[in-house]
Image (cartoon, rainbow, N blue to C red; front, side):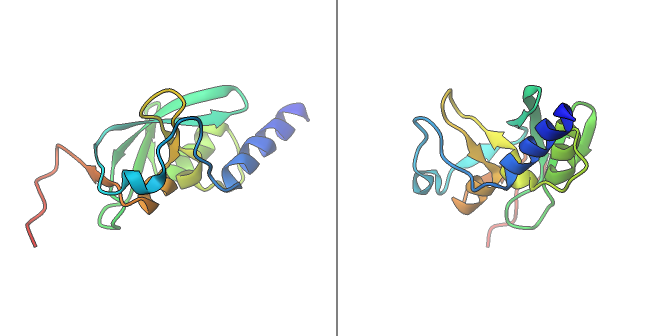
Length: 129
């Protein structure tokens, strides 16, 4: 029962509004930031912090976001469920976090809201508009 409660608590943590931690920059300062994939990510679990990578996709809806956790590549929510070992639905955009430096954590949801652009070096450049 203890591990189930820990898993439920871990799942609940993703549903809470994301907060900027430590010395993180205000979100408006991230506007226009361009980040190259793969982007290292972290997720908090009942067993501690686990690592993953955002390997493809964009925040514009052109390509679906894909997170790699171990050997599995899946949508952020599915990868979060696998990483946490829970059955309940999770918002992967709230669970997976990018840490540019110690003390700074930003959820994928915060990066999207800030207008961050994801660049995949293996994809051809988008045509100029």
